[in-house]
Image (cartoon, rainbow, N blue to C red):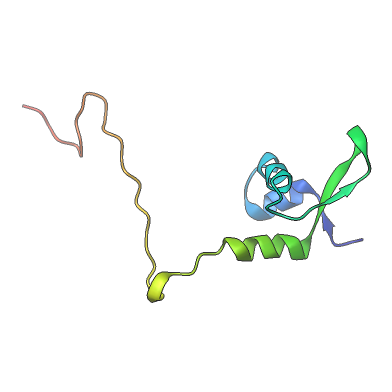
Length: 87
């Protein structure tokens, strides 16, 4: 089949590492096709399964609002927060 993608191609589409693609396949979060058996086996992905995975990852905004997730900043060394200057 011409439409089968290699793990490195899927990683490029996702903008991530190949190891994450292998882990997603192992965890059965994305469908894959196993070719061969044993140590010489390899996996491939159908484009429609890659697109389905992407579509399932898209989160719809609640009530039309886009919420930004803010990460909590770690305090700087010395216990100073938010650029506070000690006197």
